[in-house]
Image 1 (cartoon, rainbow, N blue to C red):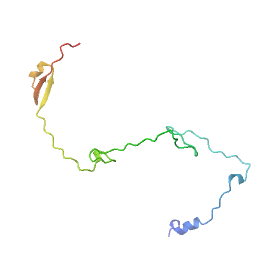
Image 2: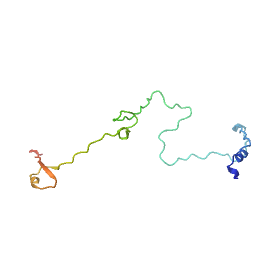
Image 3: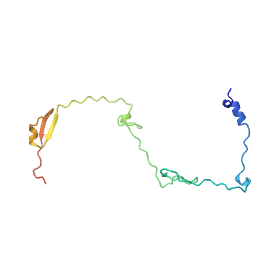
Image 4: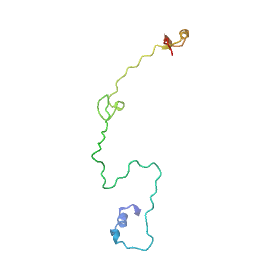
Length: 133
């Protein structure tokens, strides 16, 4: 049997009582090197936009209003929380569109009337304004 995977082994390991530590004023002082925390180093990357608030600082004052959140509404079933693209209501059956009978050529050039283009059924000539400046 593997001892480090049993409950008995955990009880043996954590059975000694852990005594609380006195506050810092009651610690014994030594004449050794004073220990200080490492210097604060600026971290790489873009800095945070919001600053860290203090423990007693108010989160928001009364002069600011709370922004209302806009809830999306489906235009098919008129319920909130989803839109028409993700609606679970049955999709309406759209009839297939008719095929185009041919292309329409719109031109301002008279010479284009005599040119044969494939699948062009109608040629419309548009005249330019007389006084072009």
